[in-house]
Structure formats: C-alpha cells, structure tokens
Amino acid sequence: MSLWTSLRGFWRCIRHVISVDGTHLKGRFRGTMFVATAQDGNEQVYPIGFGYDDSKNNLSWEWFLDCLNGALSHIDDLVFISDRYANIEARISKVFLYATHTICCWHFAENVKKRFHRKDVAAIMDKAARAYTELKNNLNTFDYVEAAGPHKWSLVHCPQQRYKVMTTNVAECISSCLKFAQQLLMLTLAEFIRNMLQRWFHDRHLAAQSMRYQLTNASHIVILEGVEKYCYMTVNPVDWNIFSVKRSGKQWTVDLALKTCTCNKFQMDHFPCSHALAAARERNLDFTSLCADYHKRQTLIDAYSVPIIPVGHPSSWILPSDIAECVVLNRKSKRQSGSPMEGRHASSSERTTTKLCRRCGQTCHNSRRCSNPPLINEGSSRIVPKEYSCKCSICHSVAHNKQTCPDKDSTVE
Image (cartoon, rainbow, N blue to C red; front, side, top):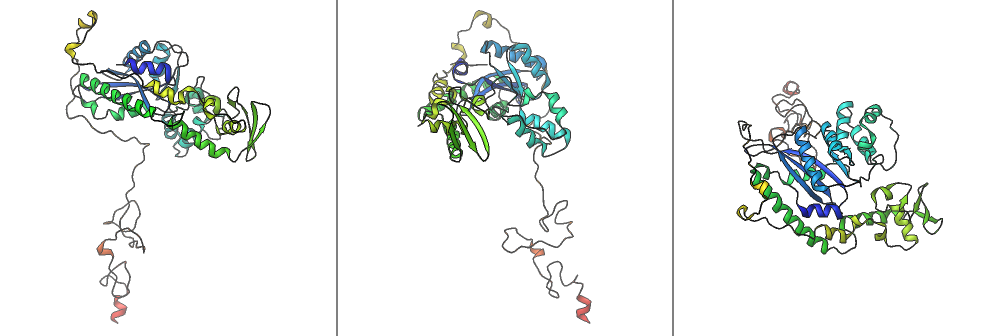
C-alpha cells in the first residue's frame, strides 16, 4: 500500500533516506506489517509505503522490497536504514541495485554492549557513529566494529548522504501510532492508515503555510543554536569565499562557494555549521542561501500540497479486469490459542526500576526483612512508617522500644 501523494513528495521534496521496519499484527489472523518511512525538512515522519504478509521471513521481506521498488522506480542516491537483521541487507542489495544499506546505530551500540558486557560502550559507540570526523578507537571492540563494516554504522564512512538520520526511530514511530489499529482486520487497517495520512497531510500543509521564516521551524532552531556558538569565534578572511575560523585553539577552513568546512558537517548535512554561519556573518550573507532546499519552508509546503482523497465505498471502485478476476484465498494458518498480547516484553538492555526498602532506603530487601535502623532525615518528604517513628522511653533511640532496649536491666538496677 503506497499512496501517489506520498511518492510524489518523496521524489521532489524529501531526503532520500528510508527507514524500514516490521511489526507483528495482533488481530484475529495475526501476520506482519512492513513499514517504509522517511523524514521531512521539519523532522517529521513521512510515510512512504506499507506491506502486509503472513510472517516476517526472507520471502516476505523480498516481496515487500520488490513492491517498494516498483513504486519508487530508480533513485541513484537512495539509502536504507534498518536493524541488524541479516537478510534485510541481502534482499535490499538484490532488489535495489543502486541503493546503499546502513544499520541503525542504536541497535548496533546495544549489540556491542551485550557482547562486551560494558555499560559505557553503548554511549561511546553512539558518539563514534554520529561523529563527522574519524575517531580513535581505544577500546577492545575494534575487531568487532571493523567486521561489522564502518560504512554501515558510521556517518563519516557512509558512501552516500545519510543526512544525520542514524536510527530507525521514524519507522518505529509509525508502529507506535498504529498500536491499537493493529488489532483490526486488513481492510479496516488499510482504511485507518489512509485516514491517518489524510489528516497528517492536511494539518502539516496548514502548519507549513503558517511558518514565519523561510526555513522550517526545526531548521530555524538549529540555526539559532549555531548563532549562539559563533559569537565566541574569530573569523579571518582568506579571500572572498574562503575563511579561517578559530575558537579555543582550534581552527577550521570554510568555503562558502563550495559549501564545505573542514569539520565535514557543512557538506555532509547540506546545512551550515556554526563555522559557516560565522563566515556568512562576515560577508553579510543570508543564512537561508547556505541551506539545501529540503530545509526550506516552500519545499515543505510542496511536500504536503496534494491532498489525499477518500477512496469511497468499495462498490464504487473501478478496478482493472485482472484485479477484479483475482481470487483471494483464505489463510492456511490457524489462529493461536489465547488472547493476543497487547504490550511487549522489555528487552534486557532497557532500564529497569530498582525497588528500595522504605525503612532504610537500601536495596536487596524490603521493610519486613530489614534489620537496619530506619532512615529519618529532617526536611525529607519520605514517609516513615508509624511503627518506626516512636522512640524508646529509656534511651530515646528510634531503633527499638523499651521492651527490647539493651539498657533496660541497668536502669532497673
């Protein structure tokens, strides 16, 4: 299922980076839904295509990608992002001959974390994947990340423009929006998706028209953050287009004509870095002229300019003869016993909550088995149980009462 309105906007106004993901349906007949999404100039989810199959295997991925290839046709600079499912790369290289396949840096960092049993390695790998220059690897993970292929997970080593899209979050956001609709039947689910996209295109087109600046709101915020940084930079012109920018003992060279910078951010994101903004201020250039068309307001308006028309009742559809004569058979698989699971099992890498003893505030036990003295801090909002708030009438301690007081015998004597 792919709407021509989405395809038109992707061809003309959207960066050619597609995130693919699959999620299990929870309806009567189960199955799998495949999602292909991109990201517009305002950092919003831009759906491209949906697919439905009985299961999530190699043949189903190949079928979905083949249908997606027929809808998109040939695109030279196409980039795919997915998780580390091994057969996705094989199917993409088979169907999309000119596309580049990359992996989600979050999934890759979590795999490195599980393999080497270090909590800090995930944050280090995520920083290395998003870096615009090569970083030195001082960890013992060098062989593992080299075997995975730096061109797969690293932004600086990617052969095509990845535009800072490093994860499959946009595809997983679609799955989250369809969380409750996954229990519907197939035709009802398709109509729900079409209605959702119709509402999105209408609302986003109005929001884009009401924007005050030439850039999108998300791009304008990034420009403002860069403006705050270049106030502390020193700019020395080399010629009319080349500048030397210095800050804190570091130096970068900016070429406004070629739209490049030695930090690599300018040419890799097609968006001016803080050094380029400092150089543009020296020449009194408009910052908008340094941005690619993907980040501009007019491009965003054009992406959502064509509305999605309702399909009407099935009795009013005009179908081709080969489609009308096609017979759709029932599924051979049986429904599993029990009600479908509405939630999901948390992975081992997700953060879990730690329960504390309400008597002493420590872990590994509860208040019934606690042998520690109660923790009472003045001014604390923590509620201390009533049985622990009484003091011993003999020694005035809060750890016991007069029946169990160790000074009881000496007091009697």
